[in-house]
Amino acid sequence: MNPSTTNALLNYSLTTLPDPLQVSPATGNQSYGTLTFVVSNGGNVAVDVSQIQFVLPIGTLAQQLTNDAAAILYNSSPAGQWNISMTASGVFTAVPASGNTVPVTTNGIVFQLFNIPVNHQVGTVNINVNETATSQGNPSQVRTASFSVAKFPYGFFFGNFTPQVPMVQDKQTVTLTWQGSDMATYNMYYGAANPVPVNNVRTWTSPALTNDTTFLLRATVVYLGETVTRDLTTTVVVANPEIQGSSLSIAGISNLAGNTTIGGTLTANSTATIAGATTINNTLSVSGNASLAAATVNQLLTASGGVSTSNLNASGNTVLNNVTINGTTAINGAVSMLKAAQGLDTSQQSKSFTVSSDGFVVVYATTFQQGGSPNAAYWGALAVNSKLGLFAAGTANYQIVGNILTTGMASLSLPMANGSTFSLVRYTGSVGIPQFTAWWIPIGSTAAPTNTIREATAEEMADLPAEPHPDSFLPHPVNGLLVDALLEALKHPIDDDRKHALKESLKSLLQ
Image (tube, rainbow, N blue to C red; front, side):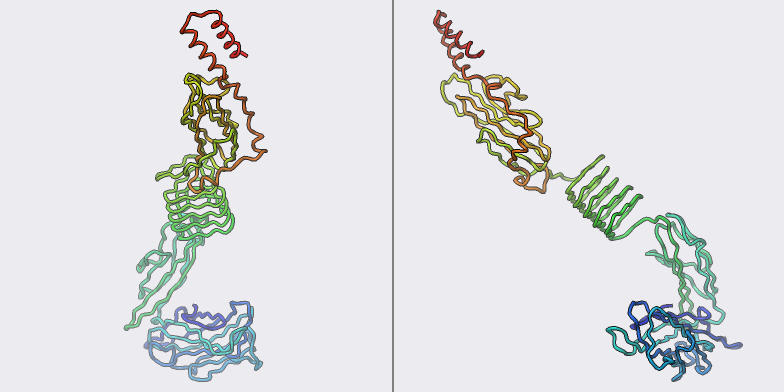
């Protein structure tokens, strides 16, 4: 057994023989006991010992061990290193045989007090070990380790607490057996479960185990108003156990291949790979890359690296810096993906931009500032030139021809992938002066729109298709002359001069 309290520099443990001790019967032969103390150094600094005392309470009471201290014998190991004597009633003092302090490092010491006549009263005895020692940073002084030793009724026995097998598979049970007197009550303790009474049996089968489990069997005896207890423990190992905890911190690469339930926070300071169905009741925080095959996160999900998931269910807030979703993703709450629009400059004939987010370019043809003849054509276009092609939003009183893919529209919305480059190209006629507006709308709720678009470099602009000349798709200015000539011809008989004017207009149009 270990000390109930200690401030000693060395480690002390105590075993008794028999285990537990038995009091002497009212009549008949005396019961004797043995106390064996094992002394060791659990640190990496030498402890210099000048004296160790073992103090036994002497008398006939329940709280005393024996009323015959003179009968007690003693020895030590290694032999010849310590001199032991009873310096007072029940006080056994061990001093170095050399007269100098003994350094205790990796070597252990065993002290034994035997032939102890145990008195007749059931109870618990307090045994003290007084250590006089020094070590680096610890001055020489007396320090104490205390043990609580129970004396059971004569004839009591309790032991051989063992599992049927030392290891089981996940979710398997284990059978435990022991021996014990009928005069005691027995309770089984394990994990966080309530104690299980096992008074009338000496074998017990556990529930299904999911992780390594230590079982504690406690025997309790109440005799003439005194209560004594004795604990025995054994541990069963579970192969491939489930992990259930309130907080899991993973500093390196972790692979969770089976189903995993984590009651608290999961923090992975590097890469996390979860191959099975995983429920995280609190927060999932991954500093590196995260691969989640089927994850349910009930609170905040934060991933600073790349995230790859085939089925992600995040019912709380989610912050993912780099996500690849291979399968179905269900979002049960509100979605915030778009930021406010960023206005773009449309005053120049051509201006190019590069984006660092997926999003949309939206252009809108508003009004024309009219000039010239009231019968003149009003035409113009604001084209978006990208790898997708050339698209334009324009207004006019004619059908735009050429390689404009959408014509005669008052507005236009085009998707842009992260890293795309595009140009806003303004085409205007000599009569109508169109007014246009354009916006950039990024996808992603965490970035300001101004941070996701910039003017393109010359290298980026080189990848764009060549912009066509306006004459290839906008109406020729002579169209206005043709209209004037037709209107004038319809008012009067067509004479040679009017025929000539129409011919000249047609020639100019076809040139």
